[in-house]
Length: 441
Ligand SMILES: [Zn+2]
Image (cartoon, rainbow, N blue to C red):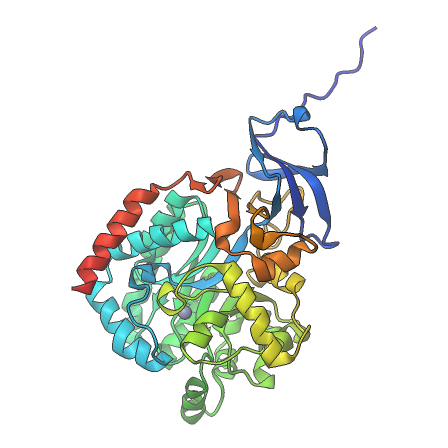
């Protein structure tokens, strides 16, 4: 008698085995001795097992003594600026931007500068656990090429900055169509339009941006209400806050990400929540440039989804989201009181809540069957991680990016045992140092 056909056994492409998996799923399940099977870039199984001998995958990564969790999302950065790290410290925002950064960018900004800056940033982000970043800079087609080579994911927002009016904008928009077609070549890159700020773009162009993004279903990424001076200037000119102005011109119809949001009024928070605008908190940049402390607890209480961002390397000065998490928690003690933002909350903000802010949570942000395999393993072997009572506490308060041991994006291994596999680290560092010497002269 014939036995019924057995379904063929599915062999995973990759298995991550032996770690403690923080799934960040709806039940926030934690799975000890986790085996995570990955095939065609997606998670196909996640369970607790004891025996490594059962593993059949083509490749197995040993994650014992690690926490395995979704990769971090850097919600706001300017990777092209990485070559300006440390060149202008200890200045308030306006002076730093107008007297230092804008002139340096004018002198040195080029495709080559952005390409290498983004490669350097990608190295740093892979090594510190980021798997997706939201970028805003110039020559973003060069940034997208670097992202593609690194294996990371990114939303590359081409920056619009001008004050001269509609004619100039027509030129920018003509180039924008070309930009959109260029970055179609990079499957891990999503496009965005990134008008710099209320003070960096004229009103007619803001209206154009709003329409343009709407017609193309394009994401919008901007700096919003970073300082009180920015809000006051807008009030004098338009009799309303920037958030209210953007509502008036229909900008918030688009999937929007607003960085900073330090100086918000209650009505602004209500508008951001109503339109589901994702807010990116950049605590270290805000502190360093003297902007202030964003009302993160209040925003979350109202329902706004938050991501953490490092901002550019020139105002931080690193791209390490675990350090950012530590700063964010301690700042909210000052701003909102002890225990209002907890370790577990900040890990959500780095992963699933950020994915919700970007409307990408159907694809990433938690370890669940069917989602893209974008995940990291963070070692908890070092003295500063011993003993281990609460994994969320370690991630939020003890760990740094240097503890990230493995990184996987879309099922591809970007880093294994602290070695980046997709980029030539030594040559990128050498070239970056050479750029530094030229810029310093
Ligand atoms: Zn910024």
